Length: 93
Image (tube, rainbow, N blue to C red; front, side, top):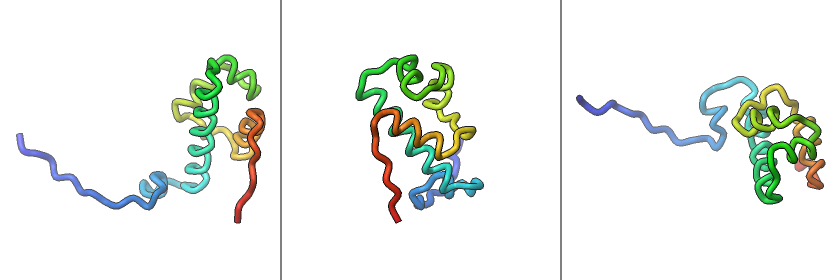
């Protein structure tokens, strides 16, 4: 078996843009927010049930979100989850 030829490209820093997905910047921001929510959940040693209670969603929703299924959430809704963890969110220009 011969090795497959693989092309390597330098990333733009946004994997969603690199894959030419629609709304790449919004999806990247959502992914960053969800990663922070996951980090906060771990830092506070919360179960998914307790994290869901903090954010006002069910444990199955927390599980889906942490597995990368967060497209249905708006950026504003994800930000409300951050504020539920007492995080200040500041818009930068």
